[in-house]
Picture (tube, rainbow, N blue to C red):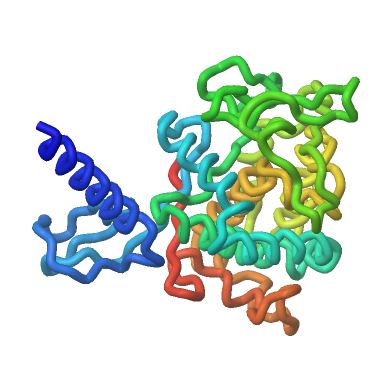
Length: 322
Ligand SMILES: [Cu+2]
């Protein structure tokens, strides 16, 4: 009886190791043969969406999803992985480096020639860090334009600001320096990095309707090619700054905003808007950035290398699910 019990534990712990290894491998253009129908789509072990060609999974895409539509389990996985990054012995340094870089490079990254490609690069770098902990993780996006009249709500199960462990927690406590005191990032559970001054995550919600709703976004996306500069400015200035300021606290301070967990979700949405614009056609995809002669702040890359989401450096392919 005792022996059987022992074997059960050994098997269980081995299964756990296999499970862990299966989801923490660096990347996954899985070339081992699989049984699949030619031309069909399948998820690989890292849950990338791949196409089946000649019995192999090829052209694998990281699928970024609307946070509010993800399963509770997926949302928990994302949040837990994100929290782990700041203490994980293997990735902590790289995570810190990226936050520090965003803290110092904010201004250079906000010029029209850099904003979109710099943040596309930054998002993939952050995603890479998280995927070294769990390769099934991709960055979710937060489409606040769908919910402008109660964007701050945290009572719905699907809400970004839900205080359970599948949400980001809610507004800060104004009697306590706006520290967040509920949810996965409450001050007793999670702190900002030293490079961001340490201390609690702060929020100070301005509970007014957000100015730009779904129809506004649709209009912006429908601008013609010649008005790319208008499109870019609307995204970089209007859409980008609005939630930074409405959330307040850490998100409102450009020197530390990158340390707020919601920044990645907001910037994923900004990246998705560029992605949608680019999907209107090849001219839309390539407008403007190919001619920019300088490298992205803190990066070895030119902006033009981050134009095509289906062919990014490091063999990364990204798609956004509606
Ligand atoms: Cu920002």
